[in-house]
Image (cartoon, rainbow, N blue to C red; front, side, top):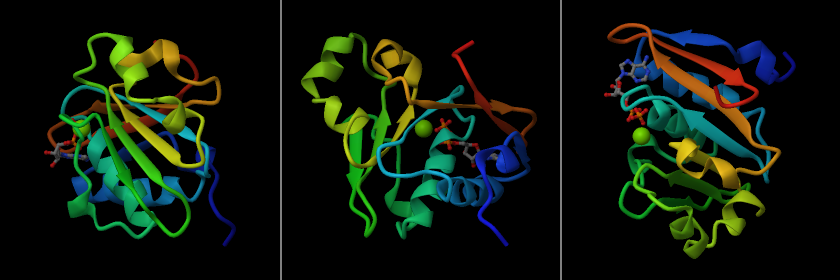
Amino acid sequence: MPAPSLSDLLPAETASPEETLALGRQLATTFEAGDVVALYGDLGAGKTHLVKGICAAFGLPPHIVSSPTFTLVNEYKTDAFPLYHIDAYRIKHVEEFFELGYEEYFYGDGLCLVEWPERVEALLPEHTLRLRLTHLGENRRRIWAINNEE
Ligand code: ADP
Ligand code: MG
């Protein structure tokens, strides 16, 4: 079976955290080094679960992946390329992101996954892939690709 493309996988609905992990694993096959994936959605929408699934596809056990709320960025080494997991929730001024050296993450050789991208919207590269996650019910989530932040 040929590898799925993004449009085969999204939009999607998941009915459990495990299904969101599985979707992340599948999405990961469509990503490559240098990609920036922005994950929009409220607290509890499942952004971190999707990241866990994506990271699992590169051999990282889900329990080591958690929102880097205080450090802003977690870097995971994989056999393929580095994974950068950014949680911009606490960024109040884009200057903080400059000080972090964001170019390495947005224009480097790794795959960059960004939670709360609206906090750094103006700095997101043109090639950013934007995904939105939303609550449909207690355990149901909808995940789809958006072209521009709504
Ligand atoms: P975010 O990073 O968007 O704040 P998390 O992935 O950290 O979200 O948390 C999602 C929460 O919702 C977890 O407590 C998880 O168990 C729960 N949940 C329930 N159903 C789902 C689902 N279908 N997909 C993802 N998480 C779900
Ligand atoms: Mg999170």
